[in-house]
Image 1 (tube, helix red, strand yellow):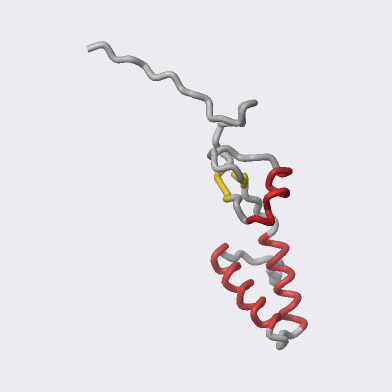
Image 2: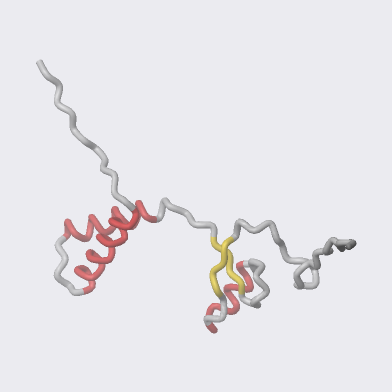
Length: 107
């Protein structure tokens, strides 16, 4: 007797997931979504939230990620920008960028 295979999960590209999520969001906010569509929206939201992005916030414009507390204080002004956090740079006690010594060429 042959066994039947029941697929229990599916793969969806990130772009496709975002596109579907946006479409479902529009349907839900228009007030015409079915419960199945609302459930699908929740499932996609849960799946998207499993992807974590390393974000930093630069609120004083020095190119170095600031603390979350500074972001919370300035969030109302929209002056913070999102920056990449893979940088090894850290804030110095003065808040200024450390100065790199240049090698002098003798010629």
